[in-house]
Length: 218
Image (spheres, rainbow, N blue to C red):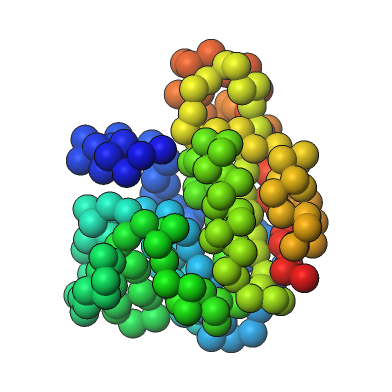
C-alpha cells in the first residue's frame, strides 16, 4: 500500500488493526523462542502496539519501525514516556528506555540497525502488504536479519475473494514460498477467530483463522 493510504488511516482513526491488549498469541508462544535476556527484538510496521511495551517489560530491547508519526507519538504518550528524538537521514528515531521507534519507511531502514536483532515479532506487517510487496518485504527486510535470528510470525487466513485487504490472507503455502529458503518454519497454532471479528462477518467473510509460526534464520 502507498504511504498516503496509511497516513490517512491514522489521521482518520481507522485503525481496526490496533489492539487494546498484547497479542494473545505473543503472550502464549513467545517463550518458545527461548531468547536470552536483553535480546534485541525487531517489530516491523509497529503502529502503537502494546506488544512493544510487553516485550520491553520482559527485558528485551525493542526496535520498532512505523511510517506514521501520529502512531509513534501516541505510543509514547500512552506509555507515559518522553522520548529523545533524533533525525537520521529521512527517518526520526524516538528512544525511551529499552524502546526505540524509527518513524520512517521499513524498506529504507538502515541495515546496520537490524544487524544485531536476535528476534523479530511480526503480527500486522506481513498481512498488511499486497502480494507483490510481501515478496519484496521478505527479501529486503527479513533478508537483512542475521543468521540465528528467531521470529514469531502471526498470520490470517480467509477466502481472498470475500474481502479486500488489508489485512490480507497469507496461508502456509505462501509463508513457505516467502521464507523457507532462508528460515526454518514451525507451525505453532492455528485457530478459528471468526466469531471474535464481527467486522469481518459484516464484510461477508465466512471463515477466518489466525496462525502462529516460529521462524529461525539458517
